[in-house]
Image (cartoon, rainbow, N blue to C red; front, top):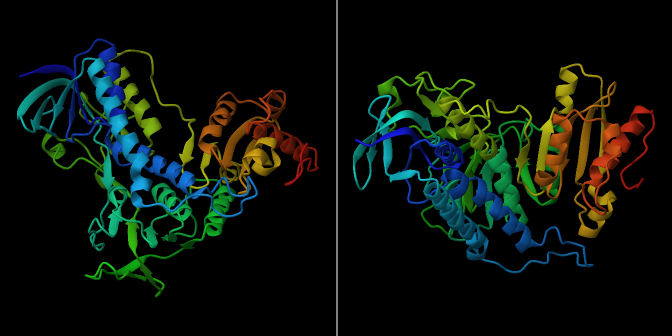
Length: 474
């Protein structure tokens, strides 16, 4: 029986980074992957594919070039599903090779097959070759899969989940997305940008409830401008799937309305991928939606077994999952380099337009009884925004403490928001003030001017007057 210091189950962002770190510190590492493609959902079905499709939609639709050169219509071309999926396939195939190379470079022994616990140290691998291997430590990084309610007749052709949507054979004329979380909103705006008539059905009265309320409402406004219809406080009570694929799906809503659409996408939740691991057999504690329960060190109730990434639930971000994997290795082998996950990290939603945030929302400031102020700046008011032709009402919002002027939260909606937020993250983490910010020099013209203009606006609000209004420049 082969013996290892660490066995990692899953090659997604969390598993790969944990395995590589352990190997870097000189430990003997095995990694088990059940698929013939590496990288997990982050590479194959989730993070990178959906973000690549968004960039493809922006390019093919020309949505951000509208009006730049005096052209008021879409500047894209007629396109088919092959064009739409081309870059996604290039990226996923390339990243699979990068992950595979990274594991090989660090001397990690990779086993292809399905992993299951024999006991707390031994793992059975069921693949082309069946064998049992021993690990002093085990790390579960198996990710998640789309939740499938029993009342939805998935056929992987027209009634799809967030994995199978990546394998469509044709563009729908219309699509209904059930669920207005991150995945649902991202795909809805991608299809909307491509000119597909899009409906979102949501059982609540708002989308993306963790966002600042103003930003959430601004995203709803942009969706509506892109002809996406959102049906709030609603759900789907019935499905009619005709045998003739030329005929539309008939979806009956709780409100009594009926939607006739070409495709349906379920995007209302995922479950941890623990089926077949034999968690019960070894007494491993699990939670709702098949998640594995862990402590702050990402350690399960069995001391030598850890779990990281989507399989432990919130926040289920590729960015945090990578760090969770590294932190788990820190505690396994006492590397003393990364003890805990920071509580200040950005959220990025790759909708059209993008949304990103760090720190507290305005509602949180109210709930915490903070004497706060706000400052705004608009893309269209910056020189760089004018050059780009960005007239989508994108903006940056600062939330700060009125007494100290310390910046507490940054919220951005607009082009490249997920890139711009990282400077805001440093402002919040380093407890920088509005005065610090206005004394900073940025390249000109760049979108980072948004930060300076928002600071001036905030200072104006403190002084009891609005220095900067939408449409004005300082």
